[in-house]
Image (cartoon, rainbow, N blue to C red):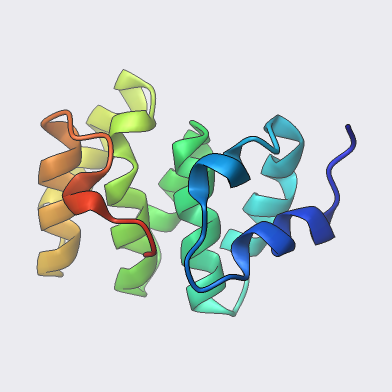
Length: 123
């Protein structure tokens, strides 16, 4: 099945995103998630980061970890447990020392093995 931007947006637009169902779009969604994660709509970008992170897209997490808006860094931190060990270790160093307490909280929980740190479902 070919994934379109509309497919991805349809999954991310609800207030309460069903992330497991959205992840079922598969790797074809990653280019669109990368695009949305870099967009100016921060709430949508945070959802895109979170979904991409749950799908193992370390490059999206790395980009979000450098963003000024803490909502994007929280979304990245919450997904570290899904990242490769190398990506998780590299980003954990940065995010555990983040100035935002929410980022530090989620980074600490994620690197301790919690797949969904603090049960974050909508970043």
